Amino acid sequence: MKKILITGGACAGKTTILKLIKQYLEEKNYNVNIIEEVPTKLINEGVTPEKIGKMEFQELIIKTQINSEKNCPKDGINIFDGSPIDSMKFITREEFDKIVKKYKSNFEEIINGYDGILFLETVAKEFPKLYSNENNKARLTDVEGAVFRNDKLFNVYNVCSKIYLIKPDSDLEVKKKRVIEAIKKIIEKN
Image 1 (tube, one colour):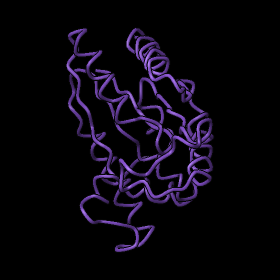
Image 2: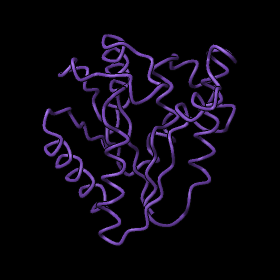
Image 3: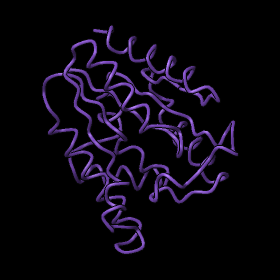
Image 4: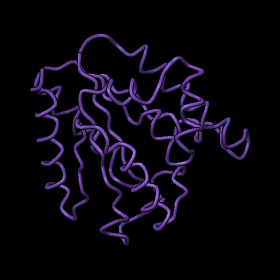
């Protein structure tokens, strides 16, 4: 079993890349399980920080993701669309540590639980005119906010040696090639 995390900034192409990875791996005869992104699902269902409170919302996300990771399929390749750590775009490390401790986990256990982490950098950094909220109503951030949160989250993940930074590119085929190269490296590691 392999565990791969897809994370990164807003409007980085995570949904498109998830489909690409799944298709690529299934063509190689791997059993692929996608564990869906929690915050977008909650927001689309009407559960928002404004309705239940910022900290309550982050705790719900973290708790749900920890449970998803602990109860994921035990065979094939599990690809996670986001991690409990992604909440650190919105809360401090101290707040994060306090929440995960309630669920018998910690930062090191979570980040070291992945065989590889693909960090997709927001398009807002290099191509701000391409940044859009249109295809995801849960994405509420403006360009400057997207860049700020992207960099904040990258600094959190950058302590891990298993991270692959995937920069945006105006040519989607170039980006896809970078993703596939990273996936090959992750899969080939024992």
